Length: 85
Image (tube, rainbow, N blue to C red):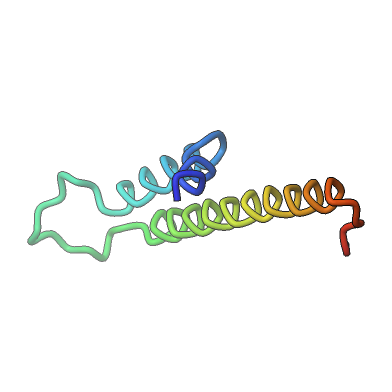
């Protein structure tokens, strides 16, 4: 769990998360009152924020997969067998 958070918030992942949060805030500004018309909100900002969160999740998945594959190959070489892939 700790490593997963390091992969998510370390390096490029933190930039993606911050950009996603800012995009969602730009969609519905915090100063907007509750009774205002929501038809003037730009939905593309919300879509961008969601896509950035998806990309951050994919980046986490691929980084974790690379680390697992590296350690599997490392351990199989130390044991004496060759990796299957």
